[in-house]
Image (cartoon, rainbow, N blue to C red; front, side):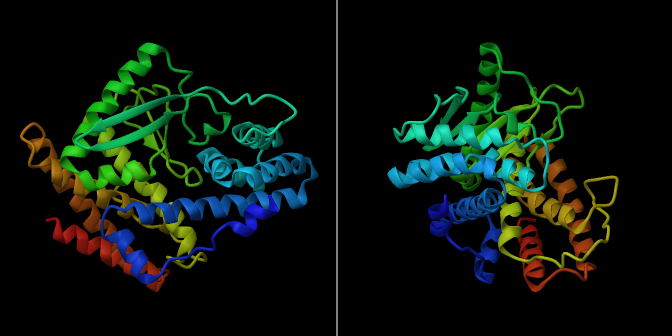
Length: 345
């Protein structure tokens, strides 16, 4: 495990790189940078945990031994989105992050590279959706079993039946066709970075989708979304994943800011982080509605939603303008997002 920490890249963002993350959908290299940054953060948290908790040493030793055999295969295991959630929760002393979870990750790493371990890999078998259209592909793991996926504050679905998988896959196929045809840059971004879908339980409120800031590449949503709603949700939620990592790489605001800001997307005021996340995610949503405006099937709805989202973004950027806690990097991000919204008008 010590070798993994030494090999992990030390990452940051230049102003130019930050501007690119605000200018448009991200490319492969940008997504890889975020994936590496998330992995680095997870490894540093685990290293800290192992140094203070002897109970974790056996699992860390197995992971380190497996890494020496096949570093690439082990790194893919460690990029599991829930490991970042586990490491953060464990660091905070939460009961939701038992030591046994790292044992399970270690067994998976060991078995993946052919190393003997004390017990068989008991990782649950998961379904994967392969979405293909117009030369673009997305492979999405449907995680309805991992205990650490319960990190969204919403009820989860039980393991999906074959019928439920068939219905969900049909909606994902249709959503992917929309993205590949109407918003290919966002389809490419998702193909590079979106890895995991968690089915939520049917709460009856409708249209819930959500991410966790420590689970890069994963999102959750309720059943029953239409293809358009799902396409919007996929793009929207992945923006939150991106910005969560960007915030680890660039200081966008003074963390001493304990103020509350009016948010056009929430009835209650939000901290500065919430407002930044809203502005970042809905700028991409506006791009997608703009792309759908030229499709006769969606034009009327898309035009109405685009006008609404642009009004909301105008309010959000005006509120951010009064935030004295924004750093130069934060103001650069906001200015680039705002200019992008104007260009798409």
